Length: 198
Image (cartoon, rainbow, N blue to C red; front, side):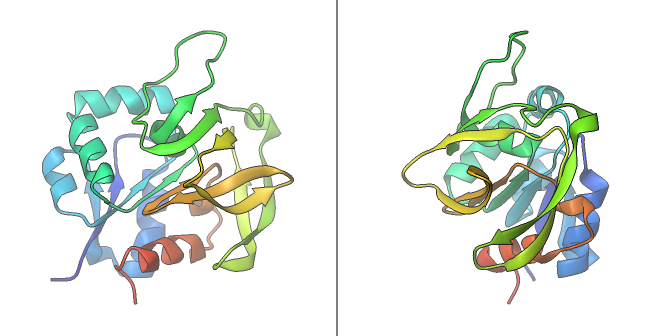
């Protein structure tokens, strides 16, 4: 049976990631992940953008936090965008209101939430991404900023001096939303690197 990819389907840009992954793999190989049993059935996972505090709470309510952390530490390939990246971070810079989500601490980066401004400050740009392409569209929507990366983290793309795509082994972290642009090359590159796409 062909390996399958999942999309964490608790909150956020779930339909867009499902559509992008299905366009690359085929819809029969893409699952919505809402429970630990769902998680057991996938060999790669997309963590969509959304609201990071809500997503963190839903991980606990769905009993996914512990098995998800365990599988990522064991090598499950994960591509996390925006709020998904915040959830994976080793450290979050505290925000003034003090209601930050509890991250999984599996990706060696320090992140500041919503650092590119409010919804009205959202913007699109084109990125050069190592090993993927020189014209990858990227939508930054209330995006987090990566403040620092550990020695084992590779930076695949930057906007000015800021890392916007990082990779640590089988974990990919993106500060923006590739799923809303209609360009599926980043999804394909991740699935190819994860062994799900030839």
